Image 1 (cartoon, one colour):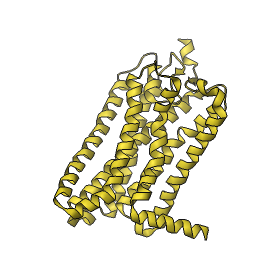
Image 2 (cartoon, rainbow, N blue to C red):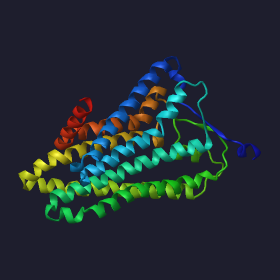
Image 3 (cartoon, helix red, strand yellow):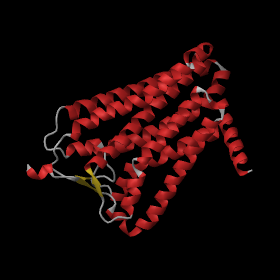
Image 4 (cartoon, one colour):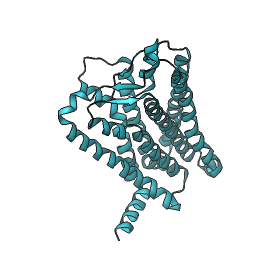
Length: 307
């Protein structure tokens, strides 16, 4: 048992096969990370600077973009460092921090998408009470709980493993996640099963809520041409974002739970990082192109910047 107490570093796998192309992959990854910062920061700054965009829909979008930057910050800097390193090590505290950031970001994304769905439901299905239901105080409270809840739940979930002693140091992934860390524990506790199960159930409830709101949205749109126009203008970007997010996360989640070792290392890596590449880039672009008011403000902002 003396050996398990001295483990201070974990080894990450998944990059060895890319060693001969690491410079090219480093440049592509750095470019991808720069694009993520560019598109998300453009949306964030535009919404913050323009008071006409200080409405619930745009505030939630701003938070979604901020969360995209937060989540990717837990992955890209370490991954870029590993691409130029021969030893892919991460400290135990660093591994816990990375897992915490990735998990809490995914959960916050789902919370914000649920808020955006509720906002569209009230706007289209209950327009007469929209301004009273989505007033400033409530929006601030909604955003606060959308952030604090995943941070708190992931803190508790991570805390169940932090005090564990580890009988192994190899994590078969290019970044840390709580499930793989807990598998290295010498004697996993019941809390390491109960808390993740509660979190899965809690955020599955978010998914059910989103489906419920879209049931009424689609029902309302069938009865009104005006509502159909509103749906196509403001709900379609949200729906596309939701689909991209769900597919990307499920891809990785299903692979972690049921993945086959027969897959090539490159395919495993692609499945592992899909939700850290596609949603942070595509989501701001979808909203930037689809929301007319936001698109005009961005164009005005960019023109003012150049002049």
